Image (cartoon, rainbow, N blue to C red; front, side, top):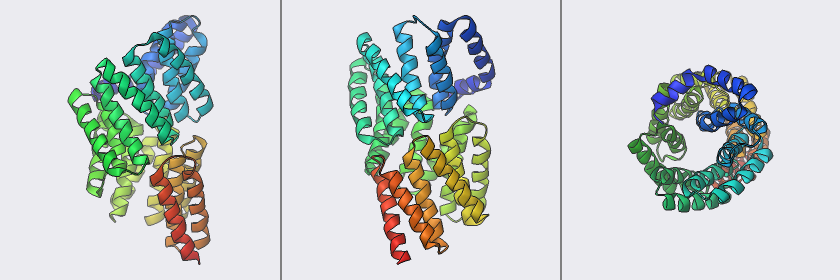
Length: 362
């Protein structure tokens, strides 16, 4: 939806949650329907913990609910659960939803189910499994004639291409998806594509432009978690460009915004950006401690690609300051994290860093 609608839902969040609490006690089926309608909003605004709690509570209390509503809530809970560090329960719910969706047999619903399953695997850095579900989603969306659905497949296939090391294809697909989202007026999925474009853009200028556009939209939509994500990305670009003042300001903004959200994923990104900025141009020891926190947070929720990035950045910091033993140790941990998924780029960066610091140590 448009940023105006997202902002309105954000502004009314407390009332909506009170309404759902009332429905839990007085009308469980209404609560389930509300969860089905609001679950996607909470997930896309990076409130995965809230989404998981409401969706699973609604499922537990709504006996005899219609299959189509149950399946939607199960599928959404499957994604929110993975982002909340509840992988086993989340995948079980998604499997249960698939049984119902196959029975319903609606190609548009199956397309969205396939997209959500791919999203689970993308977060888990399982590129091959994600690609298989995206191929199914593409087939179902094509059958349904769902252009927006096909654009979301482009977006997620771009993410997978980036994992597999094809940065050019990643940028092509993500750019095409972003153009489609602009045409059809879907700012929510546009923000998602901009976040990923910020990771794969070929130049610092393009990277910064993607993060800056995301930040503008996130501020307009009143989504603090996405403000934190964009500011984190912008801070790292400015740090690489040597503008420590701008990097520090943006990193501080990211940390402040991350405290308003409900996403451990976003908290990890903000901690990593703030920590790296501090380590480079502020309190080095405090910065390193915050980056350790970020790596631990990513590991706890199963986001091993993010943990790997933290460890290789820590390795670089230690190497720069002549701490060869710590640089090697951190690089080894980066490799261990990267090897838990299919992200070829993360694995290559970690291995290259380990080789470089071992040479330095010797």
